[in-house]
Image (spheres, rainbow, N blue to C red):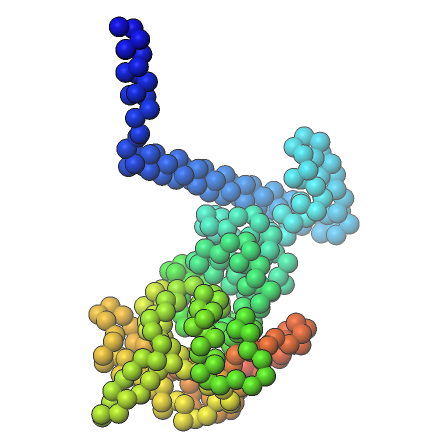
Length: 355
């Protein structure tokens, strides 16, 4: 009888568990682990900010750079003995820079729920406050990994958005709205130029080749467009006055709740493209826009764009954006210089308009 009982127990023990039970418990464990990691990360980030802020206050009292170096060196020796290499001279210097770059503890507390200390280490070397704020807020909103953040910085995303070309006060207001209300504007969504080097197009190619390459590399194209874009269709047919028109690409942006019409052009921007895009946008507004969505936006991608034409047509004030695209990237130094010059020129033109 004992042997039979033992056999029955063994059979019961080997009975497979219900799938929902295992799945639910796995979910509990993964959620708890994630929550613990978030809490630990936020605690460490705030600790580093507090240390940096406290050291900074002490240095400011003396108003001597040499004194500051001595203080950090001595403090590093003391803390390293007690707590290990996480408090080396370079680590403490970075903490001071962190507190100086992000002086508002409340903003740091909010950012630290999404950004790790590794994220902040990527952002801190950036020289301009607006640059740092832009990457921090976009990283928070779009939940970039450290690797993605590094790629965005290397790809000069900030310099390619319209916000970098605005007067500082206007740019600050837009970033404040993003921080406080998660309000994403088209100027934060669109880039200029777009980097399409991943398409592998060389020398001579047609608009059809460009479209086919984008469809083949759709994942890479959406990554370059930015978070929030969802592909809807290609060659969207629109019948107007018994004539058929075809829009190259149609996307939807979830965060700004708009359809995004994209036209691909090989050469330089032409004023006629504006009328064509306006027609497409009005048709989409009448036939495709759903309740709760905002009016569609258009993006005309050209190999080159005429700045004066775009200004005269006042495209920056309407629902159409024009941007250049690069299928082959020039050397980084040249690209950096071109983008820097474009920002200076755009700001100068805005200042002339306001005078």
